[in-house]
Image 1 (cartoon, rainbow, N blue to C red):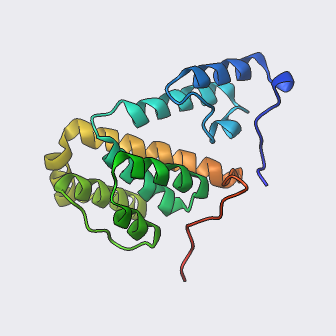
Image 2: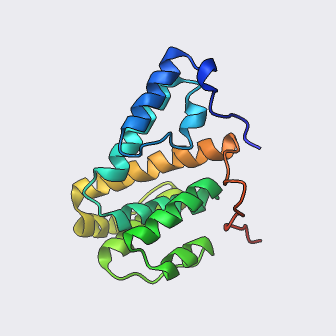
Image 3: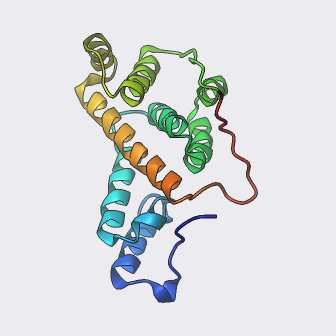
Length: 185
């Protein structure tokens, strides 16, 4: 049961209504899940959803790479809602189902190219060790470019915020779905 829910239309402040209107008028066409919590701070909701929209749809990274980074982040945080939503988006973007299954099982996937390997390696390194070693950084910049690297870090940071929000406020899966991510001892 979520700790916070979307405020009823007649209970929303003007600022909350404005933030919701901006989100639904944007590329998503709906209120993204973490915004349910962020609406308690309408300016955070506005800015957060705008940043998410930019990082999701307007980077130099192709959708398969963005979704790969998002899934690694969702798995790191065991964010069920985020995993559920972005597994679907990753498959739609053309991600290999075996890569997705390996990430879910916390196994190292086999990738098609250097760009995928770089996104995965940087994502894992940053999330698990809070840093990126020089050699890995150089490999990633060679594969993604400096702008791609900056955008990747933005995606990882934003989706860590999303995952922490969903986990803290227990915004989970739709009722008819079961979690796919399990913790192993």
